[in-house]
Length: 280
Image (tube, rainbow, N blue to C red):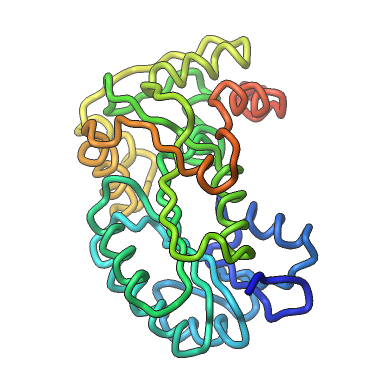
């Protein structure tokens, strides 16, 4: 049945993250009860502490599952599978999983969800546009030079608001049960082209440099990025971004009946916030 106000809460795992907080906002605007799954929430949720999972799942009717740091990491699917099985045992009816394109570990997690017996939906997303504004690429853009180990490979960057719209629909509308939506933006861009669009939107000179993976890892180490996170990011750039995802999918239109947001819209709207301006 469709989920509506007055029913049991919806759990948002990673409810303070890029997509999680947007989904939480949309559910709240609809007057739906929700529970944030994060380390600072009450009850607390921590992927690394499975003993915290049961309390977060208590009495919920549905859950949006995002895995930190990323479903691409080794062992992620097994952990997500354990969570899914616990959720089903706790009586959670609907599960929506955020997955990634071209990631074998993520696709293993997808299969575990499909076999779980829950009412499932999978949202398999391309790289987020918000990685340029809410993640590790923000500070280099502010500084005026973004240097990455990515040359000519193109990516159809997806707006986090589009992901949140699809996830919210999947959590609340029965029409999305049993669907796998592969969501991308409407255009493929290289990282250099994306950087140029941000520069145009801000009216600033922002350079893009292609560097080697070794140089990239050295830079992460200099910034004291934890080794496991650095290894993950390096793998995403050097393995997943090998051209396997150079295509556009229609998941947003399939789910919502409209086109996804273009990168130019993201760039202009984000530039207007001032977040990419150089600090004095």
